[in-house]
Image (cartoon, rainbow, N blue to C red; front, side, top):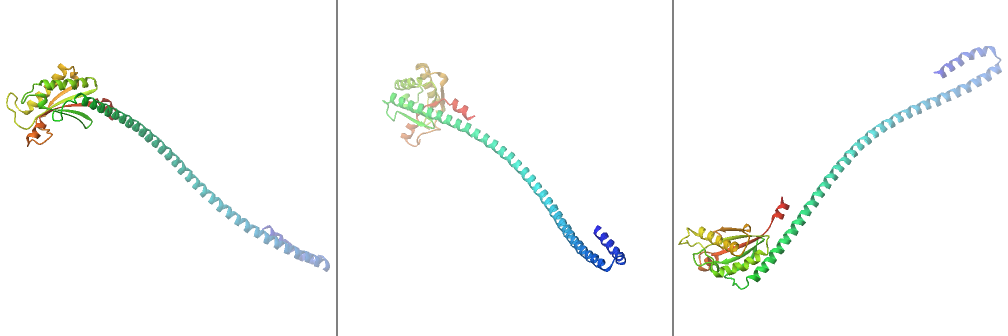
Amino acid sequence: MWNKIIFRSIVLIIPLWYACVPQKKYNEVNIRNAEMMRSLRTTENKLDSTNNSLETFIKKADKLEEDLEASNRKNEALEAKLERAIATSSSVQQELTAKEQRMMEQQERLDLLQNLLDEQRAVMEGLKTTIDKALVQYRSDELQVFEQDGKLYVSLQDKLLFPSGSATVNKDGKEALSKLAAVINNSPDIQILVEGHTDNVPIRGRFEDNWALSTARATAIVRVLTNSYDVQPERVTAAGRSFYYPKASNETPEGRAKNRRTEIILTPQLNELFQLLR
């Protein structure tokens, strides 16, 4: 705006100079005036160019500022996401640590359980070896010793223990039980279950049925073990199973002979194992 005012002032002054000064001076002034006008236009052009450049710069600056704000917002969002990721990672790490701790504890329990099982297996294997040696004189059709389901079975046929249809232990039976009791008394942690079994032929005589006979025979053996051979009564259980758990078919004499038996089942103490499994 100031440039336009100056230009108009110069235009008004020129006629006055024309009237007051000689021709030569007037020409000189005219030339200078023309030069000034060119310089003024150049200045104006530069100023316009500068203004345009300034406007462009301002627009660029505004755009940069917008971009910077957008970048800041993105950075804030990324920082928030990073914080959430760190929090999640920390939570996951804590959970993994807790799981690892539980797995270690479970592995320790499993190792301890396996050690106990190995110890029990070793005890039962040693017990079987000792019983085999103690009862080596008896034939397989009189007595058998075998392992099953972690337990040790001493299976005695009725002809070794009882007269036919009787629940009174005979001399040979007491001798076999004395040898077995000597081994049992040296293994105080072993529990003893005495099971009586019969064939399916109905019993006649003083017993009501095969249940009564199988139970009476089991009880008779328990009395011999506890009263005659000092096996602790707290360790012993008597049970009669009649003819419902046969070892062989009851359709043949040989099968029925195998089914008339008393099984002394030796079981290791499992209290520690039960504690671990809780």
